[in-house]
Length: 472
Image (tube, rainbow, N blue to C red; front, side, top):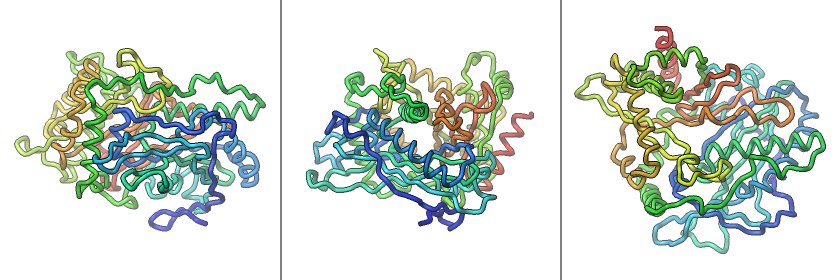
């Protein structure tokens, strides 16, 4: 069976669909993990897709007889510790139901794993898809599995929606390498939790290859105690109400639809070396010195995006008519709350930071400096009061409906390239179909990999702006 994109090109052939469960000796037979307000933030968010590429040439026989069996075995052992990933997200569909959203794990639950082989044109195979140049998003999505459809249980009513939270796909590129793609509900895990999961899976796989059994002392094993999250303002109830209200709006699905159809979008990676980042920091006005790499890079990208929109006639430069643009980025609250939350806490602990400027400011002579100041202020405001104003987040989102917004996916602090399953570190980590993703560089110490997803004309214009700005 072939899995292909919307254009019918670049297919992969599905070799096997299977379900992976934790070992039968897992003591937990049923568990309900309640959602906190950190999790509620993502209730209406589409499940993101990601892909690891591994440059490990092997034959189809070696893939089927060695790599896949080992990955299955180590995944099962990993799910012993990360059992909620086998479970289902249970959320009420209306406020009339008093059910609290939870992740429910029951004995026998499992994760969907697809095993596939790339059977398309080799010129559009491993080297093409794992590259940094512009690639069709539709082709990358052939490596990312869909989440299975939720099933209905006899012990729940129609007022509760049940949905799986994780699916995985391992795809062989014969004699070139393989990829591990996945889709996950953001409600269940943030980037830190997901990074810990993959590092745990990789570590267990390595131990398995060398004949070690002791996996219980890994520093990436999850911490589940929800009592460390304090919600004195009742933010969880407010956000649940707001999310359910938004779901019932007619234009709810349109809010998450990309400006272009998937088969019109391309994805590219631009690299910023340490010296280039230092060059940007030099441009920061003296009164704004000591700003982080994250702040200056996001400020630079923000100005380049605004200039791209203006150049393509998608925004006006007129100061009296210029619309406001919004950059939304995340701050990990694990170290910011009192008391701090353990770094291996399972779930979400990221808080939204919101920066706003007019297009005319961003494209103006002081655009970069203004963006640096606005992002820095938004970050400092959240640091000073991590939970301040959170109850109004969805109201603010509603008030800016129709205005330009984009978020920042990924984090330079997470070790995406540390997931070595014993056959080498990833060649590439791809954040699929996010307008802007940011991770640490694999090839340049202190550098960053910036992933972008635009239409072809937007990508060409943006890349020109981005490159020109660095050389000026």
